[in-house]
Image (cartoon, rainbow, N blue to C red):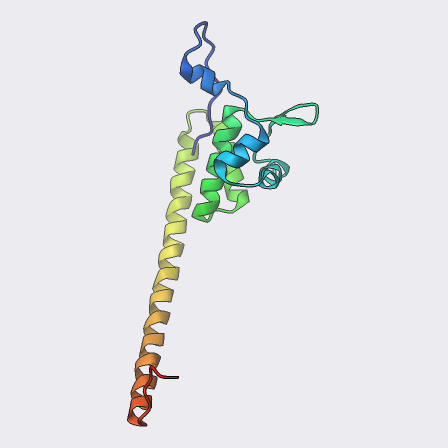
Length: 150
């Protein structure tokens, strides 16, 4: 979950360096990630991304784009914004990304455990409903009523 590192200084402008120096508008990022500009501004208000300003216009770097990608992925995975911020901020502490990866691994394992517990609970609940369904359908048939009818 490492955020984009700052571009290396180089005299020759390779495509990778050009991409790392690219600036994005809020509209471009909103369109690319299929979110609203308001969503991106919300993440900015929460301190998850910090675009440069040029007058009233927000200018997003490749690093901001990478952070936004991870924010959205983290949300899809069920991480809270606080967890996402902590994970992203670890990159600022350790540019190797090792601390960040260890913490992501630890938290992912916790999420997996919780999801597996919830899945077991859901499976048990489904089993109970199937038992109810079977008994009620049998009782209806015994009374001469088609369980599938209205």
